[in-house]
Image (tube, rainbow, N blue to C red; front, side, top):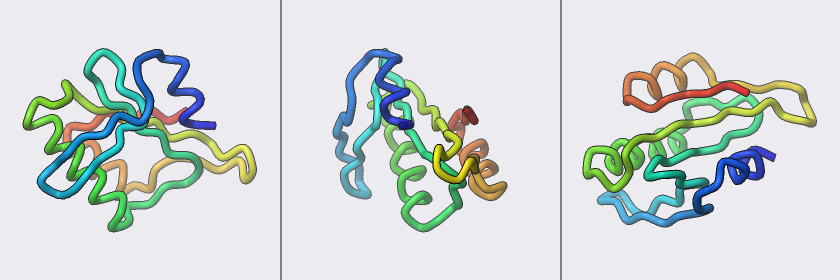
Amino acid sequence: MGEDSLKLMGGESQVYYRTSQGGRYVDQLVDGFAHESKVGYTSLTSDISRQISKDVELIQTEQVQGATWHVFQSPVTGVGGPSQPLLNTLQQSGINVIIH
């Protein structure tokens, strides 16, 4: 659902980048900007923290111009959005957040 919505923006899907922390697949790359999709309530887990860290590196090394994370409501549970710690971390990292 989320990735399909991002595809409507155009650009290229599942673009791979190398970082010092390992590979990072960007869900949708549009005009040099990375867009990440999450569906449902999303917490700041170690995996999510690693994705954020890689996105920050991609921005700092100018491999991408910026990043936006899109958090969609789950069509199954009706719940969606980032946890407050996740939202805070994304904002402090300079990553835009759009809650759909």
